[in-house]
Amino acid sequence: MKERAIIIGSGFGGLATGVRLAAKGYDVTVLESLDAPGGRAYVHRQDGFVFDGGPTIITAPFLLEELWALCGRKLHDEIDLRAIEPFYDIRFDDGDVLHYSGDPAAMRDEVRRISPADVDGYERFLELSRRIFEVGFERLGHVSFADWRTMLKVAPELVRLKSYRSVYGLVTSYVEHPKLRIALSFHPLLVGGNPFQTTSVYALIAYLERRWGVHYVMGGTGRLVDGLCDLIRGQGGQIRFNAKVAAIETEDGCVTGVRLASGERLASRIVVSNADSATTYRKLLPAGTSRRWHPRRLKRARYSMSLFVWYFGTDRRYDDVPHHSILLGPRYRELLDDIFKHHRLADDFSLYLHRPTATDRAMAPDGCDAFYVLSPVPHQASGTDWDTRAERYRQAIEDFLAATVLPGLGAHVVSSRVMTPQDFESRLDSYQGAAFGLAPTLTQSAWFRPHNVSRDVDGLYFVGAGTHPGAGVPGVLSSARVVDSALPDLRNSHDLP
Image 1 (cartoon, rainbow, N blue to C red):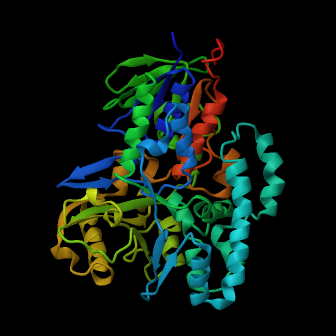
Image 2: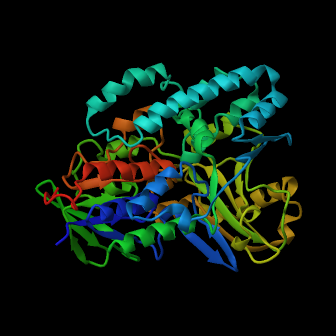
Image 3: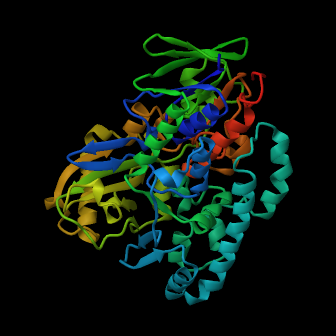
């Protein structure tokens, strides 16, 4: 009989782990509490529109190519990835637009247009981003930090790369113009971090995008989710929906299996949690299991922002709106302070606007557009009553879009749904409704983050945003590589973990 491996959650991290372990000869069972796969990448279909629930940007496609190759298949035979260029349009509050590009010459021209004096500083920043990328992503992104000595070995190099600075602090040492400081420092928001608090290791994202580009999956990100599910099933694994895990069961410090909310018990000596790491420790494991991640510490920890997401479809097309737009409000640092420090829902906002129909018309009925607009907001510590506030907030976003890039929007919306921090907390079981789990600060990264290989329970592993290396599609796919490296290949050995 094969050794069973149970995976809790079918987000990208859980599915990637399922592919890897099934390819190594494990009997994989993925348990998903929702009625369809994806977790944060769940797909909403309504009124003829297709709305990707979460991730919309794919970078580092080699991580996906690896998964298909493990199954003897080719990603590009089954998944159509389209490069998006420019990556984003960044629209400032004064109406000026920076076309953030992967083309070196085009990006230099944009920097020069805004501030000729900052071109050299921009080039030097990008070179440092490359060096941070080589250490933080290529060397350490798939390394387990289960042993503190691993952290000690790399600490001098991380200090040389100024990891003690924030991303924004690092950027300001290279460029002077306020618009460029914003444009080069916003990337931590893509993984739930505050640019003014997130370790400058995350400045590697700028070079990561330059290295592989920014891609869109034709058919939506859900097409990738379906593809990963197909890889697992093709190797004999199974994925069960509406299968909420109520407890991870242990005995004498070892995993023995899981208990579902229905009362059903599934035995296994290997359990991989793709659930929120704080929720796993607080709700799924027996009380007192972890000396390190105890309730008091979890309560004191810093968590990512949450999100307000409005999915909407229009009965007309807005062909002058690009695939990815970042629409900045009048405040930058002050707004982020409201979100991350004061946990206060402000009246103003900055937005990420996704228009997949700019590239893929199949996401909406003929003559229509599909949109997804995301506003960073504080997590549930804000005390916001979203039951009463959600519609007012959505209307404010609609009014802003109508006044800037989507004229006449209100008269053309024919499909609408929203997602609030309450949904992240209740539907996705994220502690405090934090959309990305633990915030990516220096003291909550690498060894300081919940480990991929549990130090508390033998046979328990973690993947996803709440463990090393962190949030974002490349991060959670890399976490699956770490777990993969910790378990033996049963196809070539009779040794069981």
